[in-house]
Length: 247
Length: 265
Image 1 (cartoon, each protein chain N blue to C red):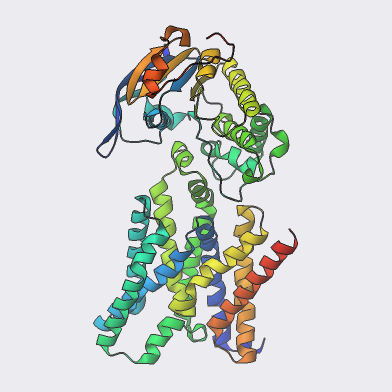
Image 2 (image 1 turned 180 degrees about the horizontal axis):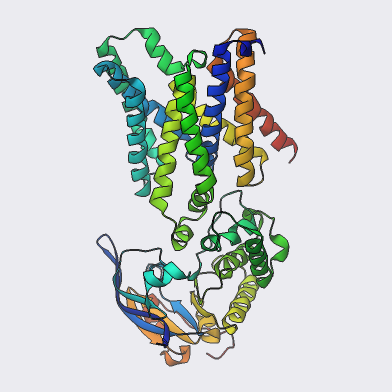
């Protein structure tokens, strides 16, 4: 049976002890599209992402990926995941070793030549081919983010999820980053980006999920949302200034 | 080199090298995970085991092993719930020593025996100790061969390790248990007071001059083995305690690598 949706979330509730991080979230996402998740800090965006990629194990409700139960799907394939950019203490790990992490499940005992070739190709894909032997903490924020994307895409996932990938990046790096992500989406990969950049949301994405403990709204375009919507979502006055100056 | 003409010298060298390999390999993970206090803490917590064994007249190695493994699991459990390994050790460190001292006092044990536990005696180890060390070192080497990447991934990015489906509790607790066992084995050589140096110092030296974590895993055992070799020679030539001599050599190597690091910019 061919599945219409790449991701279906039904009645998803996630708790951290007594704290409810997400409550009865329902949505379905189509294959090959570009989605963004927006919402206030502490609103459950990262929890949602971590539940989808398998980091959070305990939850109520259903998460289906390409029609399969999440755990069943994740046993066979990875969902590409780019975490929030960390400070990276001086951990002595090379860029190539980080990208190889994404191929960990493909290897039997140790990484072989074909794994290194794939890792180098992924680095080439994100324009970081000359950096494979550099240590991660020697790179700038934007370069680190590209390495993390290379790690996420090296196993050729069907879905790529990024959690606030542009935090701490300068405007130019953000622009480069979004161009790269758009290119990946154009290859047929479903892309989901958690972001606060509402302007970006309107410019690039095919759909918007607004999360604040529960799914507030699932809109196709930022223009569908009323003017005061983001102010209500974030709890303070927010004006969506679009990159293409539409609003 | 004269020391190696005698059986006790050969046994000390073999035991020391085995212990050096095991502790430095695990020590590399300890240094990368920034839990250097843990080794010292496990050794001191094991003092309860020494006290219990002497008080109830049980075999000290078995009781100490059991206590060290239990301590490692408890501290690991606390760490998985947000209490960093070193904080857990800090809480239990002095209490366990105090309890061990009280038990030994009540058992009315000769001071020289207690000193042997505190400062070890690498020149007094027998073939039984060497066999025991061999088994432990073999297990540690196997762990590093099969699970080095796993524990490094968990250390570097635990969330992504979960995404990869790595069995984090298994990898983490196996590491802690092997660390505890290696420390207890090395305690026979260097004693409770000095054993943490075997875990931390060679790996810390290696971290200063190795660019990558892979380099650390190669260099730390070399430094540690060389320290045992030269430490034993210096101990014989200058008639100083062997365990302290080994640790002193490790300290000098650390200072040297630190200077190399500073001078090379």
